[in-house]
Image (cartoon, rainbow, N blue to C red; front, side, top):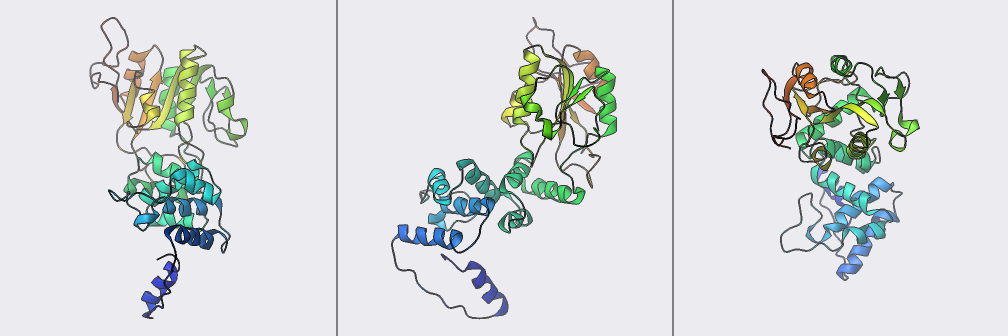
Length: 319
């Protein structure tokens, strides 16, 4: 079906026999008909065009939400679909994420132009492409009406106990800062472009504002260069991600249960980890073992880094 899918569903709903017109032309002409129908006859946002492009990538097998059928190549590559719809390849990839992993409510908001495809894709990435978690994450974000995940006070108390004074909160909220620190960078300040130094607490953006990847890379770079002396970083515990792999050599605590963020309408729909960058691993272990099991990495005997202490989990290998 090249066009009229919604009209067909409406006919089925009210019991009316639909009338079909057969398109007579080549595959390329059929493809161009679909593009023209979806772009020229409708005023689509970039996000809506992303979904059209993502469907065109799988056009030859009906554009369903599953992966490509074995042995049936797509009619267009992602680059070609992006060029046809006048969007970037990244935007097409975001569209594919939505088609493949978004629950109906989330995909519907993108279809209707109510939610940016990039925002929806970041929700999916933060939830590890788990549809149940994606749905719950989306529900909580809508219920909270907020773009912020404010760190719970009891977690901040542990950070303060370990670090003493926090010198920098580089991903701070707008308005009155939630984290007590000597310096804050909010969204308008663009903390990724500024130098970081001293003792840092980082709770980076996880969804519509962006992936944690660049924030984690910035933190590790500043720490390894010696500008950041100590840091605690709060992250979704997505151990299969490249940004968590960058932190593999540093000790972390996996928080028991689901953390309740201060602005959310319920518990977080994903597990949470706090990662420590610094020399006082024993102190980190002692303090943060109150909220979960603390893990380090299996260091060679010549190295001193170890997160194992009596009463806590023993050191383990990297994620």
